[in-house]
Length: 233
Image 1 (cartoon, one colour):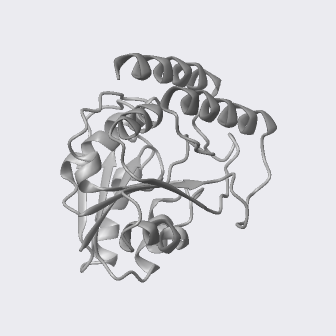
Image 2 (cartoon, one colour):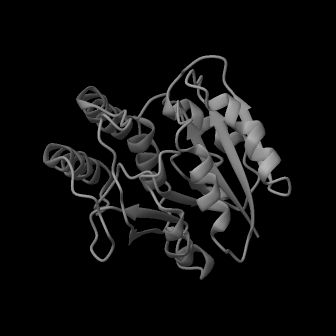
């Protein structure tokens, strides 16, 4: 069985090599490929990819360089198209999410209980960096609204860590280019009546000074996306 780790990358020169090191350090009972889609980085990130291939010559890297920035959703969609694994996992490049959680994320799929697994920052048991109160309120509100529209009971719809059996995510006609990809994936997976699990994960959030990109405008876009994809379903 093969795992595809899809990493949307935009201006992550400071963290990408450390992230890949963490990903490769995780021992898994699966073959793995690392699919990196660079969404028009301009900070020197593109100079990192040859270094990765030189440092880990035996690793299975698939690298796609977009000509211009189109958004995280676009990078994720392109990554899904390139991925060849039986299981597909989304990983951010900024070190907020720890690959040491892969075992916890993959277990419900590998033991046959789940088709989809979300890694929740709001379930107890794992370490969390303490940061923005209003971000937490915003995430919980978006999750609540999404749950109302999908009839799911998720605790963290906006999480980066989403894991899918390939047969779940590959056929979906995803269209979002920005952060609206999160509610879009959730709405369309819910419509498919797949077995969805959540597991608690650790979280080391960044400040805006450290490079955090999502803002309040993305929250309003997510609200519109949640409603739109419910009406389409």
